[in-house]
Length: 266
Picture 1 (cartoon, helix red, strand yellow):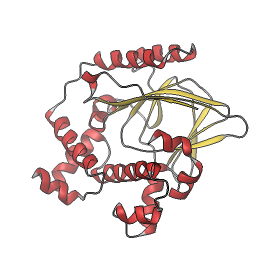
Picture 2 (cartoon, rainbow, N blue to C red):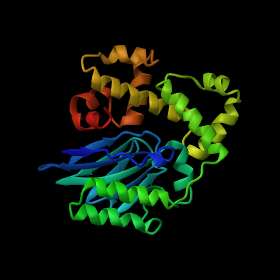
Picture 3 (cartoon, rainbow, N blue to C red):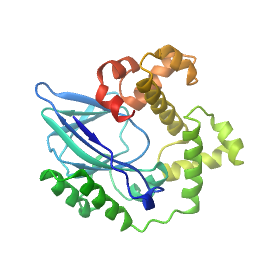
């Protein structure tokens, strides 16, 4: 398995959260990987054309046949399945950029972006010819620069809210956010949902669970029960439900069987 996370250009720090490249080989039965939902929408450049995307409690499955795609409006949890290999390069937006990049994309679940952003096919070509990941990152930089993004007042405000929640590692209540910013809960949630395309509460839970995952990855001996209480859960069922919504599997399944995704979120 190969994971690389080249840094976006510094001028794009308020627009792009990260780039990452993943290449995995797998021989044998189908490999099923849960996808952690961090509320940050992605441009995914996909080398394979035979993987499957599964979503929702009923485990609805659709094929991934696009070279460039994103996932929108799918019911959690998510899962990716493949048989032999998996290779992709992802441009992950900051949450306050979701509406800007994806509000005009029509449809739901796995959405083909080749006609919306054909310039990203250059990254796919580079991937097919085993090009350097650094070159893919430069192409991604050029793609974002060409959008000439300027943050609106709403984006700047939501950025501040997201950064506050992230600083608190998701261990914060909506009432505290309202008090901190001097705005009503209704106003904050309305503006936040419009820009992020996720509710404020869903984002808080995602930040909390991902920080718990990072903590557990660095402190392998930490008991899940203790972490549950440390991150504000006093009900095991509530904790497990939130974890499954974000990570796709139970905490025990995640930490026992998925070292590659622990590495990804370390």
